[in-house]
Length: 204
Image 1: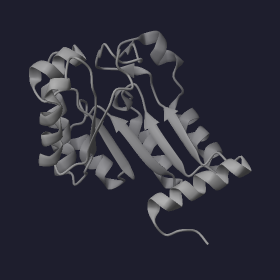
Image 2 (image 1 turned 30 degrees about the horizontal axis):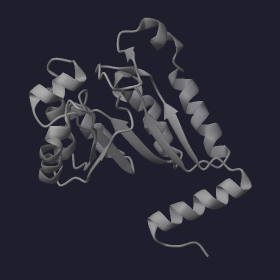
Image 3 (image 1 turned 90 degrees about the vertical axis):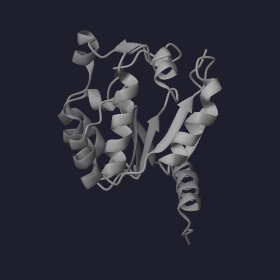
Image 4 (image 1 turned 90 degrees about the horizontal axis):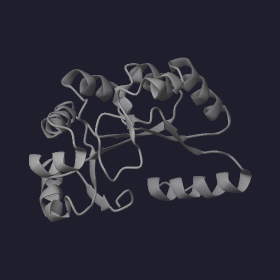
């Protein structure tokens, strides 16, 4: 008999699928391009990189890959980048995946999320939505992202998600540039009634 607790159920499914060789969990990196320029990040592809954009899978290819994954037993899928909302066809990929019954997690920096984008996302919300914060103040945030105006776009994006009824998890990657604002970033997440986590994974 399967457990009813979600976390325990997930662990059980992962364990049994590994035993049987079923790819129950997967990740689609829709693009490696990003609109930010964080020094500590392993993703170095700029948003305007035409060669990289041309090499990305098409809308149809991603949707077909999703069907193949589901047919092979996949249940949990992470959509990540780069920054997924750099793809103008994001919803043309995302919405068919939701119709396949996949349990989706979405990673974003939220700087490209407008009210319209948030409202459309809220119509078919992901099971888990994680937004990265790089600093609690404009100065620190943009010292990390090296992108003027990105802090205001981040705040706008998070507020748009909240206004649409979505409750993202807020996470940060700590470095010497922003560690002094750890408590402030956590306080911002609390103000948004969101969970908060921090890691050092991508830092130098």
